[in-house]
Image (cartoon, rainbow over the protein chains, first blue to last red):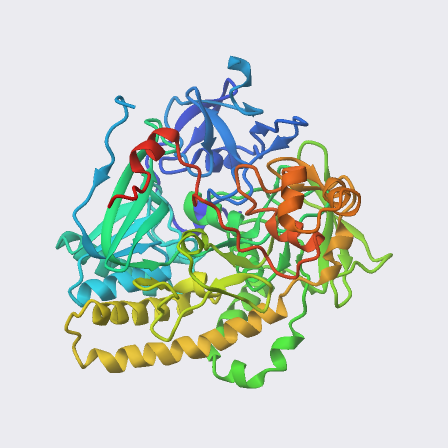
Length: 103
Length: 484
C-alpha cells in the first residue's frame, strides 16, 4: 500500500468540494489552503511575474515570501498558502500585479 | 475613510504575547497560572507556530503526532491554554498579525491586522498591555542558485509547513538540500508521508559537532533527536551526503532535475563533481533567521550569531534592552522548540515579578531548572549555528542571470554591476540602485544573499517600518498616535 500524508496521520476529513482554477475544477478538502489543494492536484505554479512573466507558486509556505499570490474571487494578491480553499471559489493565475487587466 | 470599520480596541491586559509557537505558548500558560491577564496574538489560524504547526481541524487527523517530534508536550500546553481561554484569563487572538508595537514600559499598544487573505478583506485591532513578550520565531534563510525560482523549488521549512497543515506534498520525488538540522526532520517527514527522497544534500559537515564533546554530553536529548531522524531516514532508504549542495535546478515551467556538486570547506563547488538527479520538487533552506521586525522597530539591541544571523540580546530573565519588553524562542537565537519552551517559562515568571505579582516560592525551583536547561540548550544552539554557517564560496553557485531578488526579479549580474561599476558600497545603495529587497517580502528572501554579495559577513537584521503589508484603511485607523 502506498503511503500518503492523509493516511500517515489517519485523517478522516469531512466531505471534499471543488473550486475553480483558471476555469478547471480542483478538488479540495475542508481546512486546506488554496496552495495545498493546488499541490494535491499536481499544480505548482499559479502566478506570472511582473517583468518576465515567469511562473511562480508557493515557496516559503508560511506567508512570508509572497511568491504564491493568486487572484481569488476577483481579489488580487491573496496569499494562496494562507487563504483557505472555499467551495465554488473562482481562483485565477495572477498575472503581474494582478491589476494589469483592469488598467 | 468613513466606510472603514473602526479598529477594535480591547481593555488593557497585563501581558501581550506575540507569537503562539513553543515560546509564546509556554509563556502565556505560565503567566496565566501566575495570575496575569494575557492576550496571545498569532498570525496563523491555529496555535503551534511553525514547529507545532497543526493540520486544520476539519481535516480530522487522528494521529498528528506522526508528523511531529514530542507532540505530547504540545498537547499538554494546548490543554492548559484551553483552560485559561475558557476562564477568560487568556484572550486568544489567532489570525492576528501584529504589524506594529508602540508605547513604553507599563503601557504598550499592539496593532494587529486580520483577515487580509480572506474574502472580507483586512480589519484592524489594537491590544493594550502593561508588558510585552516577543516570541516571533524565525523564517528560513535562502541562498540563491540558478533555477531556484522554478515552480516546484520550495523552502524546506515551507514544504514541512504545507505538509503539517494541509497534508500535501510538493511532488513525488523530492530532493532535500541546504544546511542545518531542519533538513533531516523535513526529509524524514516527506519520506514518511510517501515522497521518494533520492538525496539529502547538506552543505556543511557533521564532524564539527564531535569536536565539542562537552556540549554534546550536556544535551543527550539533542543527540537522541538527531539519532531518531537518522533512523527514520535509514528506514526509508534516504541517503544523506554532507559537503554537497544543489548548485542548479533545471526545468522549463517547473523543476525536472537538479545538479548536485561536492563542496570544499568554504562551500565552493568542486569542479567536475556535478551530478544530475531527476526530481519533481526540491525542498531547500540554509538555516533559520530570527524574525526581529517588531523588536528592531522598538530599538532592541541585537547580537550576531555564529552563523551570521542577528538575534535579540536578552538578560537571564529574558528581558530585552528595552524596558518592559521581553523575548523568548528563536528571536533570541535559533535553538529549537525545547529551548523556546524553557525561555518562555523563565520569561513568564520574570514578567510576573516585574509587574509586582506574588509568585509562589515553590515555583522558583522549577523555573531554576528551566533556566539551567535553557543555558545548556543555548550552548548547543551556538555550536549548531557555528557548524552550519554558510561558507563564502556559495556565491560560486550563481551565474549572471540567476535571480537574487525573487520579488523584483533582480539578477546577480545586476547586483554585481551596482557594486563594481556603479560604485555601490553597501547593501542599502545596492537596494536603491537595483530594487533588490524592495518587493513584497521586503528582503526576507534575498537579504542574506545581497549582503554577502556586497561583502558583508552578517545577515541584515532588516528594520522594516511594518512587519507585514498593511492595507491603507487599517493603517489610517490604526496608526500609532503620538498623543497617547
